[in-house]
Length: 86
Ligand code: FES
Image (cartoon, rainbow, N blue to C red; front, side, top):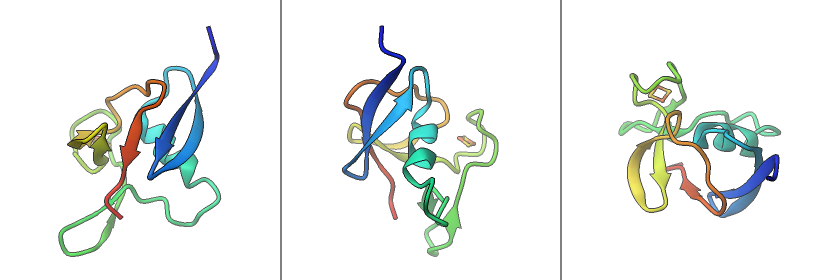
């Protein structure tokens, strides 16, 4: 069994440890960027994960075309397509 899998975040391949959440993939995709937010509010403000346990809904993204997925609750699967709204 592999110890890492590949997913895409906004079209870019990201390799994440097995059993990582989609939120981890998003943050790893931005490891070298100062932009650590996951989405933007309706008024355009950058938003990021707050609770990491499914309560705040601040980590929402589109996963495999399913909009408003809470990325902190969903484990990555090989080939998963994750899209942030920024
Ligand atoms: S970080 Fe709060 S619901 Fe995901």
